[in-house]
Length: 451
Image (cartoon, rainbow, N blue to C red; front, side):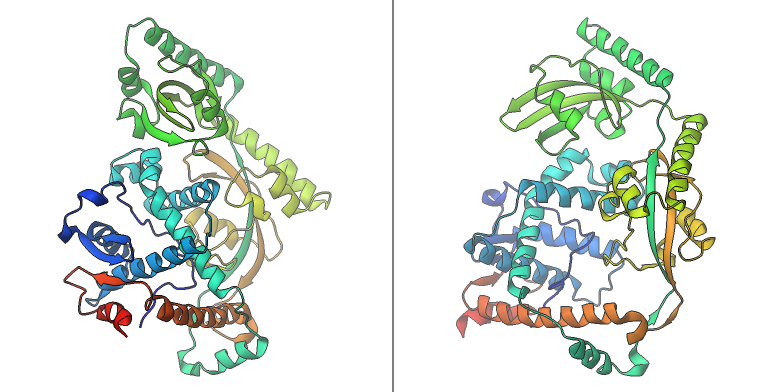
């Protein structure tokens, strides 16, 4: 039996879930049934298309391999529920935000995500929420199964020795980096002008001279929701920034809120529906313009911070935790990671052009001057970068790559443990393959229960 992506992280995979439709799905729409869990052909087809888009090789078996991934996940989820494993709403929201950030990096902008999926981010996240919850639950079960699996230095050496010398991979040039990011702030005069413009729009709406949806289409700078008349759909507490939620859960239903500010700009909103911890709103967003003087001011603030670090009056790690405004690296002391592997060692060819040229000028231990760049959410920002270490391109060795081989050996051992667990589990949970394309390829899953 083959198992796929066992014991590893399913990074960057946007598994799409169609919830609430199972009762209406005709027989031919079901790819497989695992216990009481149904896997839809549409889910498999969407994930298969994503794998192909990401460049995964298809020798004719990728579709059925994709279905097998779903089967494994469902088995893990069934067992996790029996073992009363829990996933919190906070965990789900964090993972959704991480995946949206990864997809933004892959596609180039939030607008591109909205264009491809045809809906605002809150609605997309709502569609993904249950499937992400199940994936986290499956990962919790994997961790429980492998919690006692350890690797010794001798096992790492044995693993390395088992690899033929001519099969050792060639490792490209890599670097270890940290960064501190500050966003450029608009001037008080610009902010006041934008606030007043939005106050004027609000007065027009309240006076009945235009309806909220039309005003959103005409004026809102949140492009995705503007197309929908400002609609953000239904969302749950914890999905939006605190400033937005405070207003959404306090303004009377049907009334236009006062103008308020969030990190994204100035808003007004109209609550259409609110039940318990859920709200359905429309909003209008205006963003203050960032001038070159604003960017220069952010550079100055960061230069002062850099000087403190260079004088040893403040460590880079502490400065990142206290002052960096980048949510992905702030809590790790500024450390950047390879988004696919989670490793601190990042291949040079994975750095964006701006970051590459900063790193190219640095020696190990040096900190760059403040440089302007565009953050993932599109806001102008500045950053300083510290180069911790360079790794030259080389044939993989135990000396330079011990951690890499230790992790690989551990994953092999964990995978063996999960495969043994799956052998037992599939004898107790019925699996029915209904997709005719995979009935032969995945026949072993159905036969297991017969033994």
